[in-house]
Length: 105
Image 1 (cartoon, one colour):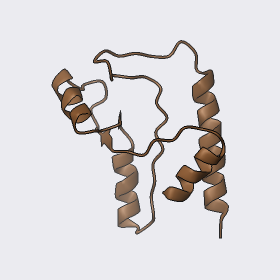
Image 2 (cartoon, one colour):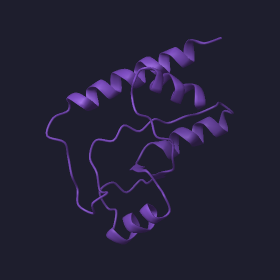
Image 3 (cartoon, helix red, strand yellow):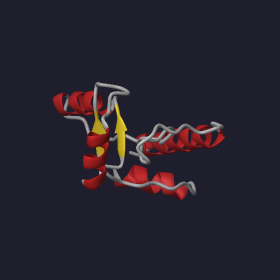
Image 4 (tube, one colour):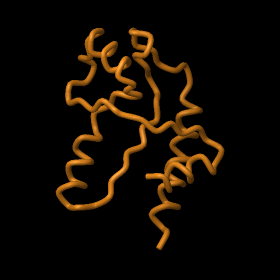
């Protein structure tokens, strides 16, 4: 994971490492859950990483997940960006970093 973080940061992007709350119940997060996970220091909520890490564990493959924040519940109301330019740029950086790390011997 540190190689991926270094590759992302080496491209001038911010990269925060932390805990993700992964759930199969999209858009059903309660205010109490959000507040509890915030208090525990959880950085993101998403729906895909649990499956990804399960497959990695079963196949004994090192696994990492990069979450690019787009919308937010941090203020206890759903907020979305007006434009997607920054998100698209972040995706390009993460793709390049992943290719870089996966291409290493």
